[in-house]
Image (cartoon, rainbow, N blue to C red; front, side, top):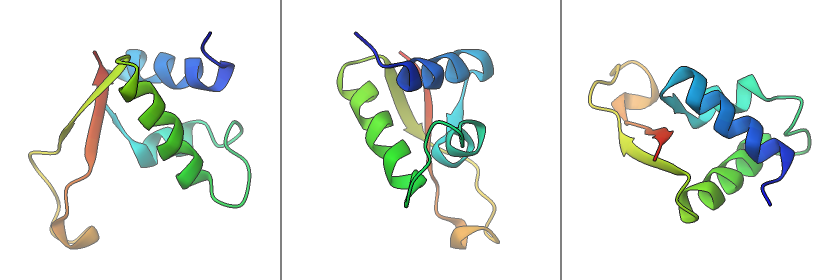
Length: 78
């Protein structure tokens, strides 16, 4: 059974088609409260990708002024 917060992540990705981890963390700030919500979000996303509900690819276009142009994984429904 999928926990409620994981199901909310899946619904968001299904609604917006593609999202990065930072966007998921901001959308669900109420679900991932604690010392490090980014870490918790990454952990939940990894679980969903491991069981095959989410898939990911890297960004093809990045802004060189943000994070020195490093691309982030983009998550989508599998």
